[in-house]
Amino acid sequence: MALDEEHKASVPDSEINKLAARPRRPLTLADLVKHGKPPLSEEALIASANFTLSLLPARLAHRITALRNLPFIVVSNPSVNKIYNNYLHSLSTLEPFYSREITTIEDEYKFTELMADLVRTHSNTIPVLAKGFLQCRKYVDPVEVTRFLDQHLRARIGTRLVAEQHLALHVASTDHPEEQCDDSHIGVIDTALKPADIVLSCQNFVGEICELKYGVRPSLIINGDPDAEFAHIPMHLEYIITELLKNAFRATIESGNEKHPIEVTIAAAPDVPSTSTKLESLRQLQLSHEKSYDYSLSGLEEYCADPDIVEPLNHVAPSITLRIRDRGGGISPETLPNIWNYSFTTFSNEDAASVDNGNSDGLNALSESGSDQSTIAGLGYGLPLSRAYAEYFGGGIAVQSMHGFGTDVYLSLSGVGKVK
Ligand code: ADP
Ligand code: MG
Image (cartoon, rainbow, N blue to C red; front, side, top):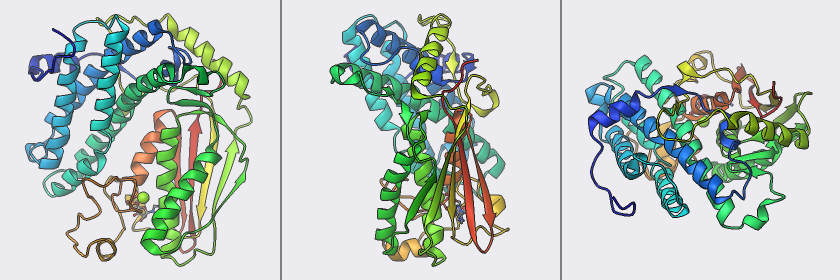
């Protein structure tokens, strides 16, 4: 079949089940750098495409099966069903490719276009999913919902990462290959990422949301080691820091304490190697992994970040901790046990209604078109999803509240550090 021929047929159930049953193992940072630093040769780009292709169908099929296994009332909810159909559609668009290997650069281009489409289709689905689960929460066991969402959203992080890494490698290798030499990026990974820079840009963004919603913008100071840098994924750090700052800013404003700046302290573990050592580590990781993979499509494993099968990342050193300290009154003992639950929020819908459109139906923080990133609060996904991102590569988030005073949030992140 011609690859550019529009492919409308859906994937048969037997194929979905076969793909979903492939063995899985977690994705590591080393997997993402093994094709080298852009600009990549045509061969390396083709290899990266085949690597991506070897993972995605099984990962999509596994999500489809998990969605199908939800109680009927959940799967038939229009919002959840929309997500389910996105997955089915994505899998069927990949079908012309996964029966054979990509061997030409022309096919690599076509495959990359498809990847870009796939990433776009799934980019703003969290508010949709949140809305669906909120609508059927009366009918399902909350423990089951939490388990599903945690697994689904963690798997989604990995799937997007695989697709986005290939896209980024392709763009960096084909658009302006001459600009890559001094660049610290390997696809979506920045090997010299400064958390302080991310804090500054997120502060700006969250400050603007606050100004629109409340008419004030709290200030923020950075101390500790603002020059600290490590190898990590800027997109992930942006998500986490945006969510943590939204919480800190909101609490600060709602408690009327905006004269007290939010304090972000950055600490780098003493064993964080210099950038050049880190690049060397990355190269070593690349080399040590090169031989262990077979690029052919048969017998390849699915990499999966389902929490039950994540392996400890022994070769990754814990490297950077950020403490976000606010004077927003802390978290009450009644609220505290719930903060890690998906959909739990103390954000008042009446507030949202009076500011937004005066129409409160309990779901007005969840517009399907609006991004989950652009409202100050209300989805109840900020903390649990940030923790999922942090834990993905061996980090974590801890919340320490002083009720009546303020909150400290500790975000620890592992970069690509020592190679054992
Ligand atoms: P959302 O912000 O949409 O409510 P989150 O998961 O980000 O969802 O936070 C859940 C809840 O935890 C918030 O509604 C709030 O009650 C509480 N919370 C989180 N961070 C803070 C903080 N820094 N100060 C006070 N309360 C907080
Ligand atoms: Mg929040």
